[in-house]
Image: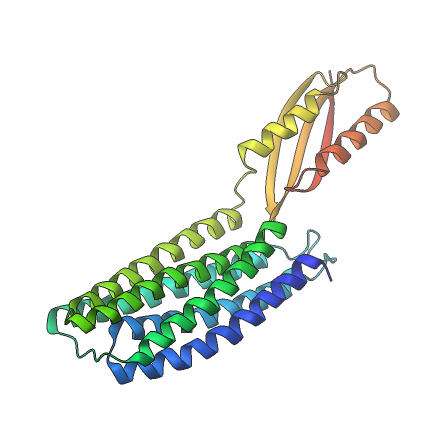
Length: 286
């Protein structure tokens, strides 16, 4: 199995284990202490378990090689399942926002507990480890499932830091900040979900390759003196890479063998770019 899929599988499994543990202790301590921020954080962990599960399943499907029915492989599964993750984040954030606003206006029954502090610190440590593990994997493989999990772990570190602050403020009888933090958590989760949704949607709707990569393709193409013009560049996403269709104009007097030899060379050079899955070149005589 490709190293990219192996490391993504590990990220999904580690995420599920860590988040199941965090969900149990957050929910228990949150409901006992009546901390709306901690309860919101526990819902966030429940969403993280779902995200890790989607990462595991989506990665498993995406790792299946191309076959007769799927000539370009199953790479888009990454984006389908990352969209599931984003939708779940948006729904969770809406529920949390509603509960937090109700608590803000009708009062909180938050009771200070050192267990809350311990849970917050434990969460930050676990999530920091998961963030750095996933970030290292993402920087190497640029998998959107890894990116979604990396952002999620980073968000959790920030969210839980504010939860810890709201707990400590209760020592000086400031209780309203707990609901404010919970509202902030809800908005943060929603924003992250929308960002991931848009990125996944763009790929599933066959967004074109970015301008930087297109410029690199043109630079490689123009390095061939025999190519008189580039008539068209069409691209479509395949997982985290792109299938590129390129139409070039060559001297009409060039032999078929020579024109195909040049096209093969150009395809090989373009395929060497990081974001290119495969290049198909059509030759037009001029």
